[in-house]
Length: 324
Ligand SMILES: Cc1cc2nc3c(=O)[nH]c(=O)nc-3n(C[C@H](O)[C@H](O)[C@H](O)COP(=O)(O)O)c2cc1C
Image 1 (cartoon, protein in one colour):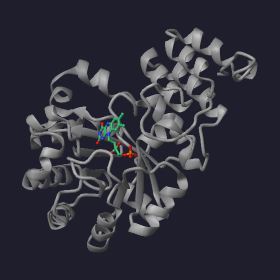
Image 2 (cartoon, rainbow, N blue to C red):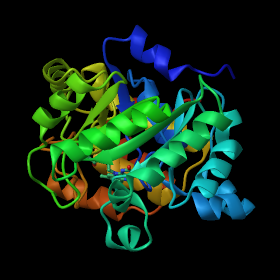
Image 3 (tube, rainbow, N blue to C red):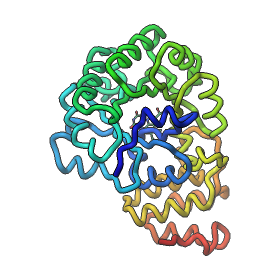
Image 4 (cartoon, rainbow, N blue to C red):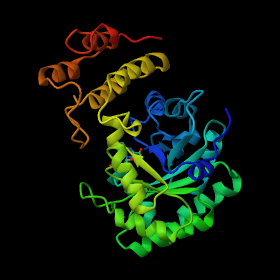
């Protein structure tokens, strides 16, 4: 399939709308679903570059794609140049870019020198970008996803050194690694945008198309990225206020035709219908409103049982049955 030039996309579109990398979630069927609802670019979940490079089994498990799954950016966790570069070379024929995770705040990641611990090692991040840029030339995209550092000048200095190394764009989750539920610091994004020439993608609490547009306008970011919002409403970028029934139906059809573990299929279904017992922070009331029905859906363990449930007259009725 023809490669997409991500830099060109930023020039063509007023705002490039991205689906975030999400471990266990942003897999092939979900990417194909959100592409039907105006998502411009999708990320894979974060993949460990060391095992990806070493093992065919890891490659088969962690990276599945298909015709139409483009533009696609593959995100890796890496703590050295060689692993990231080799992983990038392996996926470059099937993707439009690679992304380095510099935002994961989990303890295991920090201990091993992955994720947000890289924010404290800007030389390594720059070297990784530089080597990929020199080995896999433009238009193949090389990007970095960061969180904010405590001091603005540190964030800016990191971004400027990545710009000089040839990074295609930078996604900024507008919180520091220590912050969890605090409101995102969009002012910091605005300051970054005013000092950088590369596109900056805004991330953090973008739960509707309206918010996406406002954040882009107010910060000068050329792109927006959503994670929890798009899990709860995969049609978010199409301007839908909550998940349309048709979108749930497409999810079932895509999982059956592209293949998905039952667990992944079911977890997404719970989130997009507002039935999840864990929730991801949005206030979406959901399309399954009766608590008994939500509990019932959450207990189902097979595809046919789920399809029977949605085909019930009092849920979506017979027209719900998936079509191929
Ligand atoms: C279920 C889940 C999995 C995530 N996995 C990743 C990941 O693989 N790589 C990454 O950079 N960020 C990951 N994140 C963080 C998101 O990409 C995003 O930065 C964060 O959730 C803030 O955006 P939001 O407010 O739109 O959710 C994950 C978030 C969630 C909720």
